[in-house]
Every structure is written in structure tokens, then in C-alpha cells.
Length: 445
Image 1 (cartoon, rainbow, N blue to C red):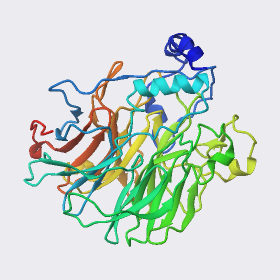
Image 2: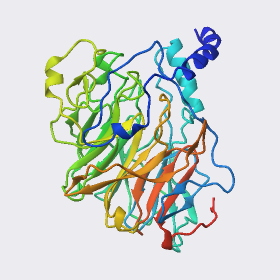
Image 3: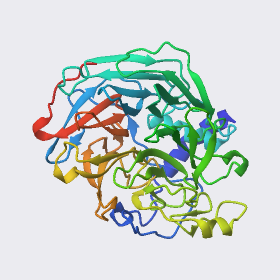
């Protein structure tokens, strides 16, 4: 099977890379609270437009928006994806990749997709590490980089509560005794709860803790694109789970969210929000990824419908009742941008134009022509909801033609009010600040 796949790979890549679907345009019409939704389309293989992941050339950085500046907060990292800022200002970064269990039984299609993901900078052996970054002198560059916890299993989400550091591995949550200021954790972890794992089409487990420390809210992605591997494999997936931090008792909080990665509390409403990657293979311009508030008990459509009650003809068996129950998300980010990171700005130090809204890390498309994403954007909010204005790109230049210097993932506000961005392909954490307060200091790796 693999030998045959290798023979077919060049022909497939040639066919799909030249197979731009008619009608693919700039994504501006497909962004906002009421995005344009074109008719679905299909082909034998999805459109493929993968950027070669090469890392940043010496002296090159992403491009900040006018009025902002960027510097390298930390470099020399191994596939950094997710961030947590501690009360003392230390920054934790999950250096991680998929656990190697995301195969589909050796089919030609899955083999080809795996090769494409490797080209895009994924599918490396996971470092399985959480590192601590410390900027003790406050110059915007972390002079300390040290391994805090090693030997994890594709860690992603992190949360601090109840005197413990909670870590969401690909297969479950563990908790370590921890106080801010520590630079190494040697205690054995406490097992909190198992999480859906196994096949792991979407392996990341994002996590945030409730303000009172009682509950952990965990984003769990689907085990497929649209349920093609069987709905038995989707139990407690494509969902946000609520888990009691001390007992591990688990409940389904909201469902129908294909891959909810970014997860954060809206500071104005107190509601949970997520950034969601929607389904593939029904066209360049479908389906918009989105950010949305998460209503307890709500259903958002996956796999039977998208963007509310727009049916997807592919999933079997049909489920008209689920389609009728689906509610639309709050704000479309555009098709295939791969919206991963999500954090809110509530008066931080990036300037008045960025004082109220959401920062979103767009990891970037692999199956759209022209490509989309590969940037960090700001979505303006008012009265706890998006204003309807288009997102403002604040950090660009991650992709140039068919080369990806980096790909943004997690975003978070640092203690000093700057924005930190994890760049997995680039192996860096970038710092975005108001131009007057930023430096272009060389990295201390």
C-alpha cells in the first residue's frame, strides 16, 4: 500500500496543486457576523496549496501593523504551540506536536495527507515538554529558558488553580503541585481525568479554568472531517467539556464544534468563547472558521450542518433534528484560515485602537487557492460582542508565496500588556507591543 502511495504521490500533488477551484477570491466577503456562504463544491481530492515550512532567515521577522512593534521574546524552541502567563509574569510554553496516532489505516489518501502535513511543518516527533520563559529585567526578551516539565504526552492546554498546574495531554489531564516562581517541577502528577484519544485526527486539548478554580473547560476536536470514521469515534469530541478540577467529574458543555482550539473568557460578558476550525473539502470558500460565545448545552452543527442550519450532504446517517437544533456562531474569520489562538484585550498597552476586542492567531490554510490566514488579527468588540468591523491584521509576513517562515498558533497577553504569539514553524515566541515601548532586540536563544 505504501509503495503504491509513493508512486501516486507526485501525480496527486501535481493534479491537486494545479486544481484551483473556480470562484476562489479574497476572503473579505466571508468574514463577519453575517458571512457570505457560497454553494458547496466537491472534487476527487481536496485543493492543496501547502507552503514549505522553512523557518525564519537570519534577520527576518513578522511585520507588525502601523503603530506596533515586534521583537523576539524567545527563540530556539521546538514547535511551540500554546502559552500560559503566570501571575509573576513567567511564561509557560507547550513545545509539542501530534502523538503519532493520527493515521487512518494506511490508505493512499491518508498517506498523502500525512506527507503534506510534514511539508507544512507538522508531524514531527513531539518534544513533549513545557518550558518556562522568564524576562526578569523587563526588557521584553526572555533571558531564561528552562524545561519545567518533561516526559508529557503531546501537551497543549495549561491552567493554574488550587495550588496546582493543570496540563492537558492528548489523552488526559494531570495536575502538579506548583507555585509561581518555580523553575522545575519534580513532583509526580495527580491524574485528573481521561480525555478522548486513540485515533486523534485532532489531538490538541485546549483548556481554561473557571474564575473560581472549580472547573476546567477543555476543547476537544473531532476524530474526522465530517464523521467519515464513524460516529462511535466521535463520543465527547467536537465539543467543549466541563471537568471538575478536584474530582475529574466530566460533563458535555457544548457540542457540534468541529475543532475548538482557542478558548478564553470574555472579560465583558463572563462567557466562554472559542476559536473553531470548520470542515474541509466542500470548496475554497467554505466553511468559514469562526470565533463564538459558547452557550451551555448548545449545539453548533457539526457534522450535519455548518454555520447554523446549512446542511452538509455528506454525513451519514442524516440527522434533520440536529440540523434544526444548530445555532450559528457569532463571527466568521474566513474559510480555511485555521483560527487557533484566541485571547481578549481589555485595555492592554497596544494602543487605544486595540483596547477592546479579540486577538486571533490564524495558523494558515493548506487547501485553499489563494491561501488564507498566516497572520494574527484583531477583531474589534463593543458591549461584549464583535462590532461587525473586519479584523485588523496586526502581525503578518509569516508566509511569502510558497514558503512559510512561521505559523502563528497561541496568543496571550503578557503581564506587561504586550501580546505574545507562539510560532510553531519558526520555533519562536514573538512579542507585539506599542511602537514606543518595543525593542528590536536580538534574540537570546
